[in-house]
Image 1 (tube, rainbow, N blue to C red):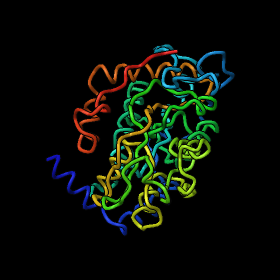
Image 2: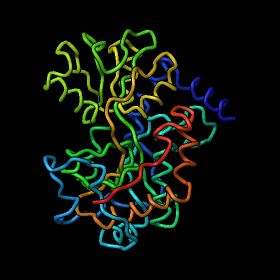
Image 3: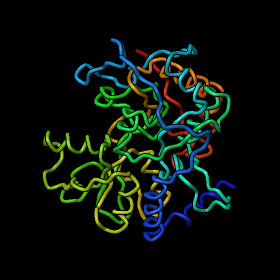
Image 4: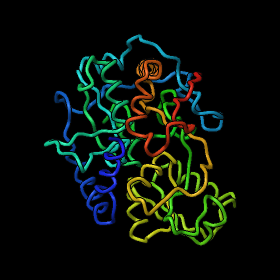
Length: 338
């Protein structure tokens, strides 16, 4: 059954034409994404002044960003009460990351719903916080708008393959990590590129604007660890757009999170991962600074999600086909709190 579903997904997603259509639809859906749950004015009412804890981490003082989150708690504060009074959770997500947050083009359903590993997590948070996984309103946001969406109050949180980083901790608060990943290179199977090494010399690399992939490329270029003839000028709002650029021959390789790269390789069997991951990173749920009670509550939910098997069930359903059942990413990270 799993093999048949995977083959159907590959047929539905493979090819330049299909992917170009997907990207066009993605742009439209970003504006028209149906909302689940009752109506509202879109304001979270969250936030408030921070205090001298994890919400005030400075990049220069940050060594292990994944260990900067607050300990779990079930106590309600102003942020949690505001969500409960509104009656639904507003979550920023992706809608075109295969098996993470996407609409299945092979679905026969009349109204195709968002699905994937991140979508499962968002629904679990809504379930535990509000009593129903359907008390949620999804908002599709591009990679480079994740932090602004939180800061402006458009969403309560972002669950969108968002890496916890020291620089981002200056702008938002994160939950404890819920997934282990790292940067990898994606290129055509016939490419001479072998990984994040000298084989990239003279190659055109694509990454998403505001991503940790671009931060790594830019930092290595400035430090002289990446050859100056490597072209890193191609950046896109949404990470999936890099795959389309690769398929069209506009770039030679993509640098992105290995978890996303594996899903993209499943979308198009003509591309493959090159070399091992060359960084260690963790995804976290991002929330507004000052929403300390919400951060603590999400961490409590993540603890339960790991302990009751929900995390592993979701991994087996969405990611085991592309990442394996016994990879280092197949086990949820053990949290360490500030």
